[in-house]
Picture 1 (tube, rainbow, N blue to C red):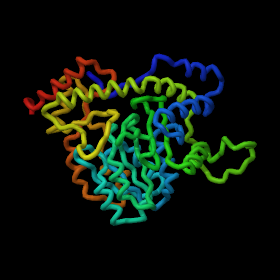
Picture 2 (cartoon, rainbow, N blue to C red):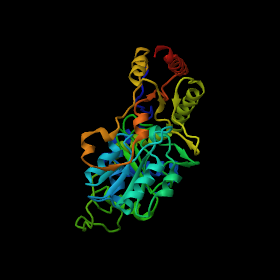
Picture 3 (cartoon, rainbow, N blue to C red):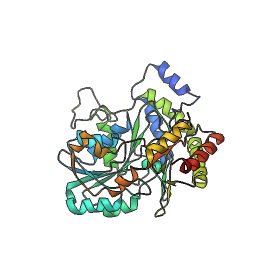
Picture 4 (cartoon, rainbow, N blue to C red):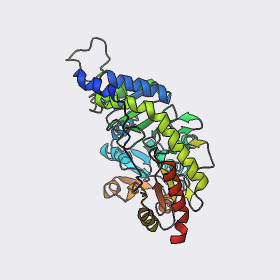
Length: 368
């Protein structure tokens, strides 16, 4: 079976061995080194390494000022991780529709919800589905001053929107996941990038209980003015991440080469794209829209190729139904979830694998 996902572990793990032999494995010098390295890579000095992408989203919502009873606009086409922090904070979800070509949140749908609820909306979470950036200029054009924009870039490390890398200053906050099967993994881990200094400084405090670890003359009995979380990354995870970053450019290059072959070679299916704005995907997923989805997945499995939608639309989960406040008409969600499917695009694929996948997808119509 040609896999849809595969864990990438770098051959060089000398930094990890250094950490394990040092006797210091909590947040320390390796976390700082990882932050400095990824900061240079994304082009943003305001980075905060945390223990998961979910923690990054939760902390971003807190920094955005989201509290119990507030409204947050989000997309149902994503991992549950995107939306569970809204629920855990006691806020309410406004479901927005998605663009049928990109599977990303629709700016027009956001505009409709904001027209209805105005300043009650405290944040908008925009997910770069599969690594393909949302239309951020359009989204920002409809946001009121009361709402902060969170880019869920769990899929999109290395993506570009109009030439700007995910995590630069596209949004107030960008969140990344370094979970096992992402572009890079730290075993598990995450990251927040911030646009302004105040959010950055507060975020660093809140990730470790609320303690300012960089305060000169800090002592064990200092006050804790704001209660935070245990969200920090540790040096073991950071050590793995440092080596992963050395290979990220190669990983992205290979995924983009494969995606271009798909785009040139797939004749019988639509694939995720947009003609409305300039975007460069990181291709964590390559998403196609197939007729008779269940039959397509069965056909692919028979041909030893893994394929599936990856996530269930979140508004169908019972737990989220309890926290949903309202939704726009989800016409796009209804349409794409009947046909959306992902095929392998990872750097582990050989040229022969890619050609074989193209051949089998193109032959599918004969089996419908």
